[in-house]
Length: 394
Image (cartoon, rainbow, N blue to C red; front, side, top):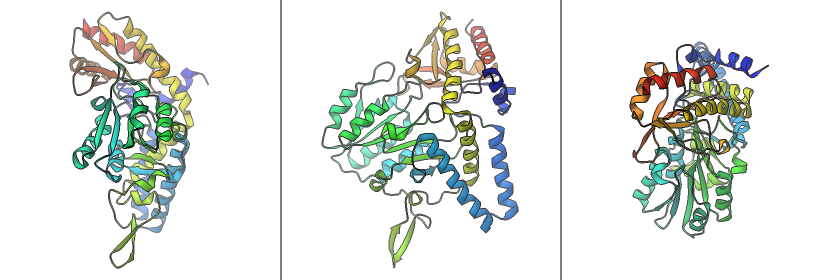
């Protein structure tokens, strides 16, 4: 089938396109009808057969296995290295609270407040609690950094962990994560990736990246439900983490008052009950894997580049982020001289166009409009977007 035929079929799966032009997938993506149905089917089965019946419990166990298998195909890890969380934030907090920190330890953070706060605040909390030093790496206007500086700091005997986003939430710049992975390995430093803006939109391979940990949610580029996310933790690196919580699913009593953790990854999942979210995530993973990540990347960039090309022709508009398509996702931030970002976002919504206002410089210094199209967006929506923006700015 042609691109237009494929897109027409895909758009039928997303009810939002009937009423809105939705280009805010970097915040929350809509979920396809098949995922809505999968969650409804789960709840019906759960209720009809009995929540704690043997058949439903066996189904939940098989569902967990299925999700782990699909995630392993998506990011090239072993299924048992997949931990279920609520969100990227929870996943990163599991890492930051699970490591045994010493006051002499050093954490290397790309950009400091220019990172998404989910990958900044937890490390500040560690510094506050244990006296650990947080070294913030200087960045250029696009968010990139000098890898030599990270390598120099990583050689410090106290360097414990390097953390950065795979792609930036505000301008879509794709960071050199494989290069940093080599630096981390060469210096025996732990390596953590916030992949909230990449998994589901570009190819992600944890083995090539060489990270110890990676966190991402279901509800962005995977087009899954809220309230469920994934923490990838390599088998080797799981040994340095202590579970944040403990309960009957994660530990056993060896004798009176002595606890022993169960096998990895279950020991990190005590209290997990979002089974309906699991059903939705499994369906959405199946959906995007069927289309293929490389195809999704091409479709995303086709729309992003068309929108970018139109915005570049508008004298009042400034575009942020890397020029080179290979160095960015479909996230497209822009601003206008004649209007502030908040006003543009609000007025675009009046036209039925959903985008977001985001900080482009860190710590709230400068706001821009962030468009983040996904594979279900169409060229006709770009035309409507540009026409509406022109009307707003005039």
